Amino acid sequence: MDHAANPEESAPAGADAAGAGADEHLVQEVERIAVALGRMFPGLCEVVLHDLRDPQHAIRAIENNLSGRQVGDSATELGLARIADPQYPSVIQNYPNQFPDGRPAKSTSIGVKNAAGEYIAALCLNLDVSVLSPVTLALSNLVATDTEHRDQPLETLRNRNARELRQAVEALSAERAGTPRSLSREDKKALVRQLHRDGYFDSRDAAQTIADLLGVSRATVYNYTK
Image 1 (cartoon, rainbow, N blue to C red):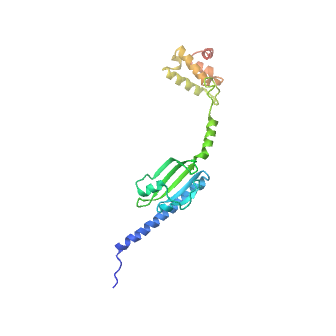
Image 2: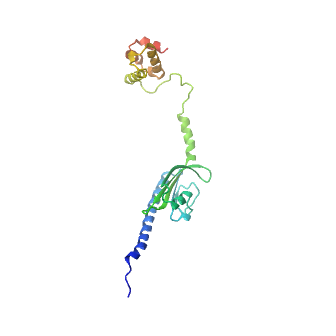
Image 3: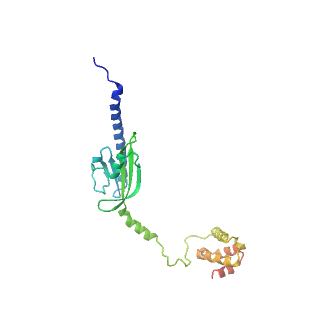
C-alpha cells in the first residue's frame, strides 16, 4: 500500500523553486531599470546588468555598449567578489575606471540581493568622462575672469541701493569695532576707500548717503576717495 508523501520532505524542493522564481522576477525588474537608464543617456553612459547566478555568462543586458562586451560575457572582479562574500558593499559609487580603448570612465556598481541575503545581480553604470572633459574645459574658460585689473575699481551689474549701502557701511564699521559716526578720521577714510573699490559709488546718490551715515560732508567723502 502506497503511503502519502511527507509534507516536510517535499517542502524544501517547493521552497527552492519558489525562491528561484522570486529571484528571476527580481532580476527581470532590474533589467527593465537598466534598459530605461541606458536609453536616458544614449552614447554617454553604458548600463550593464550582471546576472550573478551564472558568473560565466553574467552579462544579461547592456545598453549603450561602450566597452565592447556582449550579452553572455563573464562577470567582472566586482561581481565575483560579491558572489564570494554576501557582506561585500552593496554600492560602490563614482570610482575611476577605464574602457578597453583607454577612455577614462566613472563607474558605479549596485549589488542586488534576494530575500535570503545573497547577491544575485549587479547593476553597473559606466560614464564616458572623455566626452565631458572638452565641455568642462570650455566651460572653465568661459567663466574664467582676468586678474589683470583686480586692484582697480570696476563696474558692478547690480544697483547699489541705499539699504544695501547702509548695510555695507555698518558692517565695515563693525569690523573696526565702532559705529559709522564714532569711527576715527582715518577709519572713515579707509571705509570710504573700501566702498569705492567695491563699486558702491556707481549709484548717483551714494556719496551723499555715505556722508549722512558717517556724519561728514559730501565733499569730505569725495576727498577720502583720493
